[in-house]
Length: 256
Image (cartoon, rainbow, N blue to C red; front, side, top):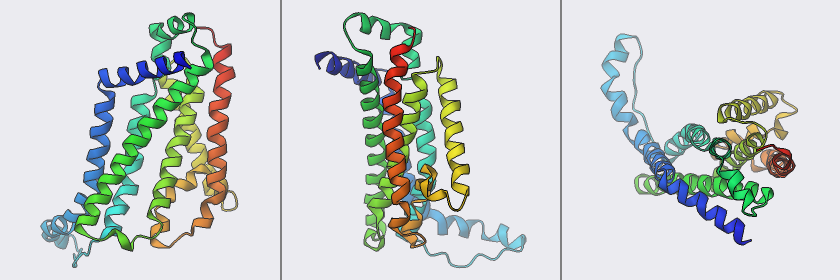
């Protein structure tokens, strides 16, 4: 266990030293601020452009914004934050292959499965930190301007998007154990995400698709019930475990 904790410590120190940790914190904090800010400024912006819109035949009426508007922005913006996170962290394995540092660590007694576990813990913790920060900032400002009490099942809806991010991390771990460069990792991860989306288009099959978790915002408006997501949650969690588990024999067979 000492070698695992030592390698994990090295990973966190490298994330801090390279500025990735600070960048992710600032990125997710910015998105957290943007969500209620955009909602709050929407009536003002629409009023500014009302004359131009009127010339186009569009009449702007009084726009009411509330907590729903702020959280709608949250669920619209979090996919962008997840894509940015995936792009930043997609070379978690591949940079080790290029630099040869992974081979050096293995020669010092670090088991390959511990590499997978350490990388998984790193990505999960950074995603949870960033996502939690974004959610907390949005929650705080939304509570200040409006009232979060009117939002039903808010934490459940937020947990669905967090789980979807965990699934993406599982795919990154899996393809990183197979492929040599982060471009291939991102293309394969994106390709699976697209397939999951297409899977979700099929009416009878969408309840099993991880992509269904991306529509978790519908819970807040009452369009969907919590029960509609249970199968997708189970399948997604199971796929996360499979991705990480399959990465271990893959990296064991890999020539470094």
